[in-house]
Image (cartoon, rainbow, N blue to C red):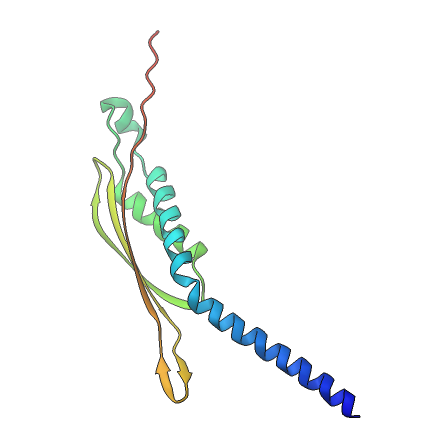
Length: 139
């Protein structure tokens, strides 16, 4: 009987350790994950919003603001975690030359530790400039 209690305590301790590791992992890796997520989404959204008709006519790279914002929001909502609340702000969206500034604020859930309510808010700001190489072929 004594050995079975040790088995139960080992299982409870294992579950407790897994829960604590999940909470700590959720808090510590969020900033790095959010930064790279925003970086990749901004790059892909800028490439999606390039106005190729304008480029063919004037040979100048130009993006469409509305298409960039739509693509960014769509991609971000597909990839963001559900454990945080995000606020996305766009600053300085220039069409030509293509430059965007994005700020994403994430506020995580509130944790009660020894009677104190703690929440961790992270702000990531990103400035991106799109550069595309031109390949000209002489016939």
